[in-house]
Length: 514
Ligand code: ADP
Ligand code: GLC
Image (cartoon, rainbow, N blue to C red; front, side, top):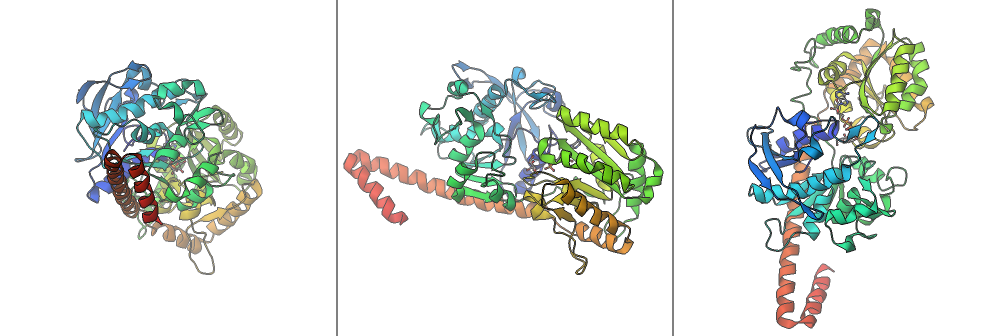
């Protein structure tokens, strides 16, 4: 697996949660998984082994050869993580960019990563059946496997899977950088990685991967539409046959109120008492008045990016505050949202607390201490926080999109079923109307407890998602093997029979398919 972030080594969001959990679940199913990711000095140095496992591995990069040292870490006893160390690329304060924008050399950083990731296999003599790549940062790998692997190479015949975690981030760069990818000229075309006159890593992956997945069934449909496809909807429609939606899991080893070490008191569905302590502890931690113990307390933990619906939240803030409640927001991201949220906290110091930092512990305290969790996302490929919230009895209020749609069944008061609240239109009125329904129900203690307990009983553990991935790996690997056999047969045939034989073989194949 190639990832640009894996928890606990480096994390900006849910991608790292997947990187840290899916391999474990696959390992439990008997897969032999190895991970490759960049050596971000600031985050990885303490967790990796002190000495490299292989030194000076040559990586062809444009017209140069730039060596990498490969370091090693462990995700658990059996799963190894290989880190690509090249300090001029990865020794940075952030992973992808500062709050002001992306790093200027992300093209070089992640092209290098993709190239080097494949060199790791021969350097450590690991021959994978399939390379599973995630998001644009590893998007060139399927293209390299398809176009640059020679027949005698260790990776000849290796299949590729590409998972789209977020289609808004595609890795788009200027066309003049294309030669540095080392891909054949013909790949700079409408069927290749050319995209509106530039180049696009995600498109390269979509076109070349043997199979594509995304992180919820709903999102797999959404991204084929103009509203959600970020201009790749046409390409995805074309490759629809190889696109599948598999919902992420929640890692309950990390996110479980029964044994969470970060929270003030542990609790369970059977005994909710500790949640009260967690609320008090959260109010004290973020310095909100304790009188809010009697009012609803809402939580947000989020990357501060356009997708997360923060403008919608700002638009309904007056109404929220007038309802008399508490709101705790934890997030880092774009500057404009830092400014917006700081202003809100200054305006309502008695009700709104904002922490602009990355703080794992506080994220857990919010999940446990809040009564409700807000995710008014404009789009949400999967979303993990709503699943964590369910387990903590913190009722999610979400927009009905992507994985939020797939995981949050709305509460139905007649049947007593459902785990949260969701609205459809991306409009402040819709958000407020739904939030108000939830807030009004909060004072009906018995009903509210029922909603909490319904949520706490849901199970989104990784096992069933991992089983779906495994099935797809097996199918893809089998198809790839059949394709390689066919190619070998075709080339033997054409060697013996010449051009006519080749045509005959093609015809036979066509008839076979029909
Ligand atoms: P996304 O991947 O789009 O950011 P997800 O809901 O899939 O959204 O996952 C977000 C993950 O990142 C969760 O584990 C969440 O707790 C964590 N997270 C986001 N922002 C912060 C923060 N400021 N501090 C701590 N954890 C955070
Ligand atoms: C992305 C998405 C998020 C998803 C995560 C893990 O960051 O924004 O919805 O849960 O990837 O797949």
